[in-house]
Image (cartoon, rainbow, N blue to C red; front, side, top):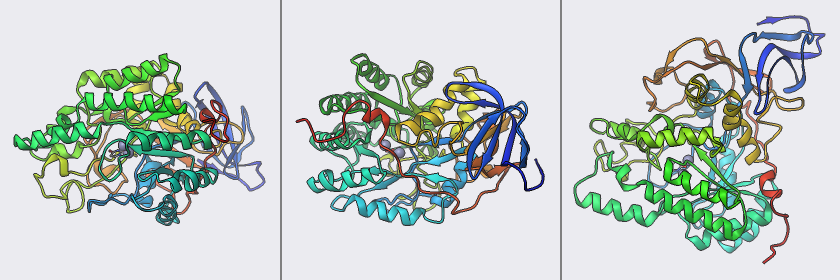
Length: 484
Ligand code: DUC
Ligand code: ZN
Ligand code: ZN
């Protein structure tokens, strides 16, 4: 890095970058002014700062479309990361935009959740952020008044749950939300697991004295996810609106998505690193340690891991998100909320992974020869920006886009250690995994937030992003009064 005088056309020039977008790979200089990319070309004049990227891949900053930060819970647990630590960790792993969830509590409004969530984020985020809305109580007032206004204001994605007593919707309620999403132009994300099957299986496991963390997997087998995935698809077909099935864990759910696409239905799919890099063996670790990997759906067997990799290769998956849902392992408000050795069904669901998402996929996906770098960019950045109405401001390297960039270091093997990560959780499920790629530099709107192995950003740099109505929704259906 070197500095020159102030009479420069650019604040920063990233020189000789091997630029990878969702479609292209080419070498050029990137000229940055006022936080945006203003020039791409060879032999650009120096900027006030020049960064030599010769021989290195430069990708758009990651858009992590599924993270939970400082999300209130109803069971007394507490997320380890707030907006400050969560976005710091994201930046250090190459992510420059996060989309966490403003959660509606039953009996309360969605707007109240949004206002509360803005207070949690303000002055804390180190990178840019938008909000999804979790709708747990789709009353008439919510679907006919609150959601339409919120969608128009830039909250254009909604998550609904088919399980968890405090959040689940029945089929009729899901249809109400989907119809609202269709009319007003929002993307609906669906957590697809059959709640009654999980309840029945859990009761039987506990009655048999089977309560160790590994039985979390037995309480939520693929059938449970497969049935709910199929039902979610059917409901979206009825409402004639695109959906995204989130955190898809294996073959049987993938088969349902494949089936839906064969019918021409606009069904999108997300998977997460835990379904590529963790398995049921991690849930079965000695003692209570398997609780570190309790998330839903659970990590499956190795054959399912392979099915998920194949889905990344053949286009079945649209995005790879972290589903960062950080709870400490030790302590009274995390995985041990009900004490060490508590039953699997009392353990808070979720694992940390916001910082490791991009390096793991670059390393095992791109450098491991499973996907090319364009597919990596699609899965980690571009497609999320498109699904959630942030493209082309985010998710690409183009003139006019925000200068959110990652310069990759692909030369050095590195072992993931929680001590080296920047989240506030007291463990990583990827402890000991070796990666061969890590961001050398992360830039958020032209500002270096990670370089030379240190966080260089600041709390409060991150801005709230109002999302456009996603093109994949509005291009399919005319926004306007319902046709039925
Ligand atoms: N679903 C999520 O999306 N995140 C954490 C837990 C869950 O069930
Ligand atoms: Zn979920
Ligand atoms: Zn989640």
